[in-house]
Length: 456
Image (spheres, rainbow, N blue to C red):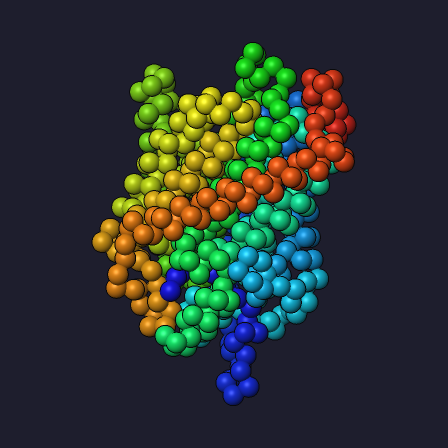
């Protein structure tokens, strides 16, 4: 069937079969990729967001980024990994790995090729880094006005009830070795995540990461309300140099994010790597071109935002489309995300501080839908993978696949928005969501953390 993720290695143990051995090269690649994803968040996303806020709030966004990352890493080990990547039902996993049970140096996990294995710990930390950056992305939507305690409590709730079900529905299946025959396919699909079984394609997180986080951020920007002075006074980024450095680190780390999702150091990883390289470049060129024509001047903020837009859009398609498909996806995303942070933002009327929805939401939706188009073999894509024969299926319908992709987008939007709304309301009526007016005017660095980024 499809080309997505993984299951615990214990599913492959058989008394009569020899013990599986790990691929050292693939293990190295996944571990390096995990480190690159961590580097994307710390310091990449932190610097990108830090440069975009005002100087009185830069430390607050940095500590939120760091603390959310650390909190989710702990939750991932306690129960997150188990609920996302062990067998349960179509919507959530089981408890086999709760409190890190069974996670040790001898635990073996699958890749996408029959008979090729990596340590389960490598997959654990790689996917854990994904969970961490997803939750950190959200805070940009309501930066400069939210309580630190509110961010922490919201993170626990949203991670548990939105991120984990989405990761399981999109990425969990019992591994390629489970596809022993055509007759076995139905049983394998019954054990897989809901969207994986339906045939939804998401190579590295268009739905699970970007749309999921963007919807939550947009809901937060509505519930928390607009910043003081929003729409009446200029609220400008305080350091675009930081933002440029952060965007560059994101692009660099994204090679691990996308190419690492192949779980093997082979041709698919190389394809995902090159597509990440090209789509991002195309998005920068497209964004700057339209901005230059419309405003008369190209901006650094536009170039950095265009890069992130391209990275987001190619994520679900990275290992599934050809190079020309990647260029088209990147270019379209650059134009649409420029509209997302301008025209669409005005239509929505929300104070999405750092344009999380305009870039990650619009870019994620664009990439998810266009994956269904450009994954077609007739357009240079990989098609749909048959794990029984280990070849691409002979038939591919663009219209049918785009419909499946749209279902994935809609399910993500509904689940994330409902969970986010309930989580924000719980936070609002417990620890509180928004800082007081005086604290907001003074800046969260001093008011919430007693520190200043720039001493006079």
